[in-house]
Image 1 (cartoon, rainbow, N blue to C red):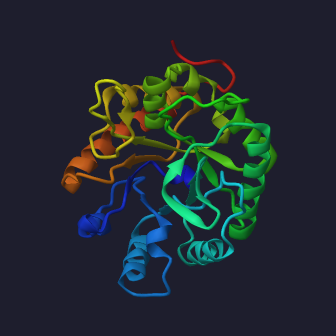
Image 2 (tube, rainbow, N blue to C red; image 1 turned 60 degrees about the horizontal axis):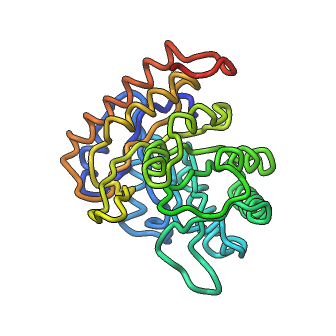
Image 3 (tube, one colour; image 1 turned 45 degrees about the horizontal axis):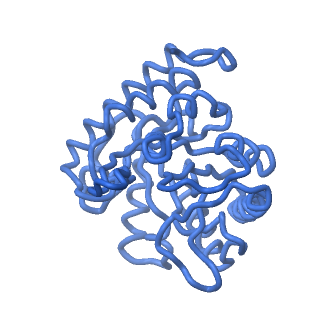
Length: 286
């Protein structure tokens, strides 16, 4: 089913009417499943209506796959029930943790890339995939400080794929933000990622943190996609071909028409990459 997906949008109830009536080829919508883990009511009814007209993606933010503890069984059971109900085209989660010792932090916290962390992550991802009976895409995080790592990020992701059978969700805005914050080479990162493992791509807006001393970029999802991020999307898809690509916008929401215009940009890049993608293994354009 993912082969038919083009550029998608994060679904917001504020533009439910426009979303339900949109008929753009390849359009799909992403939702955070945590907002729909209920037994019934208007939220699920709205999701059922959306599913009747468009493919859906479930993008989790609280499974804490990078934590020391396995996924919460009750949460995983409710997610499996939602997956069974709406039959999403894609399911994804984050290379992050948010739960420890019975406490939950409403954030995606960083994972030191050690071999022990890799083993734990493989186990947790495998548990999730077994419970959902489907392959899950894991998203690369944004970085705001340097940690001591035993693995490079791309190698870590590739080994996670090899050991667990998961796929990857490449967020090119996260790559750009991390490049600015900790000094990695964004172009080299997207050139190195294994295209065969990439199930989905995200693009989003970001903003400066406003602190002259730190000068960090924040993965804020509250602004239009920046030109360098569009450039990374073009570079990646020129090499690996088109993938389902989401425009993420979670705050300072503009009118639906403005989001639809950004979606059009993404769709044009995907269409171009379908015609001109480089063969796998032949490198990337300069």
